[in-house]
Length: 381
Image (cartoon, rainbow, N blue to C red; front, side, top):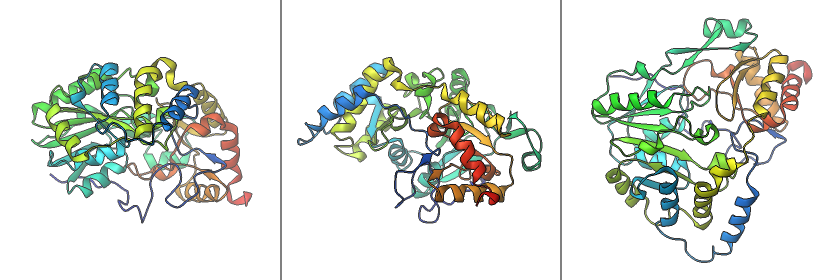
């Protein structure tokens, strides 16, 4: 069974497909609309980290026992079903390199690191093209209608469209979907798992943005009940991307082998403190996240003649209704002026050059983002 290749270069040296600074680029800029990092890190968390820094002269718990127990208490999981590490991406590479799977099956659009991790691990990746259509909100001009064949974006995921699954397959589903914000109801995710496991495969649900949804469609509490894996990032919701922390929940035997390969000290002192605080205090404080900024950005974009996808999550997928070349050129000009945008070229389906995933700084400063994009036209040079 052959797969459809993702439209993304798997070499970091040849193309960096992430929000934030590229390798070697200064981290700070005037306006960074490319990332989905919570801009409201908790003062309480920062104080806890300052206290933990005083302990950093000693080795941390090599097995991060308290962090594992905190995750277990929060989500009613046995700590034996949880692995922690320096970010969700690191754990993704560790899982795909574990030798537990023969093929990766992913619903596009999909984060480009899945393709890179599959290739590094020597696994083929079957990319499932989107089968659903998502209605646009706002004006849909000719460039969008021509590129996507109508007034809808053909990037919708339907978990029921799964092809034949083979024993040893690992199926990947991101919920909510990045970058469209499509949310898959919890029962649909569990039904997908029943189909996949019944065919001898495993399911990995990437829930990196579930905290922003209050975990309403999460299946984390079911992880490890059969071949169900759930990946979580703590970088985005805590607003501290310089501290790399995430966790993976899944079957005890497979997670045990993976933790053995990760070895001791998979998390440092500060990261262990971050995990413990996030599980115990973060949920009750809401992590300081304020979703109302998304409404302001929506209003500004629609007023400027953009088309948007009204999805879930801490970002907004939008198009300025311009041709591919003009979108690329404006993105390049803005980067030179200290404004970062995330063009969706690396998520898989065609047409990503005219789509922008706008993150937190756009939510906080919507008018500035719209004005900067307008001034980046050729006439604005």
